[in-house]
Length: 258
Image (cartoon, rainbow, N blue to C red; front, side):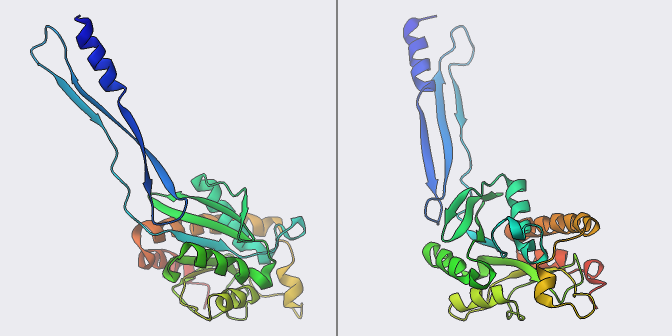
């Protein structure tokens, strides 16, 4: 083979450029390797040249989603009813390979993608009643539209392990949601995924009930609910809120909610 032809081929193969697409969110980047392997001459071939391009389609320019799970920080509250929002975010992070090891905006914090949609996952560490301090700061800094702020929390008024997805609403007496709405300047027009924890038995104080851990049997049932929640989040981000709501709020899933 002619040495000059071989050298030109090597130089063209090495002409790879690493570009980084900037998404409409600070610090969100997704690497793209683009290599142009052109005009590799092959002696004694009927074809005068072979041209091959390795490229990737640029992801849609989607605005980020913020997915927040409400709960209380610390081992003392792990596995309690009031922390199912944290558990849902943990399930999403594990399934999508998103690290939650950073601490930002008074929250355990992670960035990643679900499909080609950039997402921020957050678990406020302010304790439940001050959750809005964290949520409000994230929304303000990243300029996230409220229609793309999904808050996940426990609900005493839903039967245990049932889900309900709504596009907006009030706080329903939930102190964490009160704080979130307050720190969003009183605006409650953001979607929320409620996870039913049931009513306290007898005359048990609701405060004591929400801080009580799940039984082994309840935990097993809750795991199925978290998988449904994970699937719902994927549908919402990739196919739209309405399809996600249909999946969650179908008659089959809501038949026991009255």
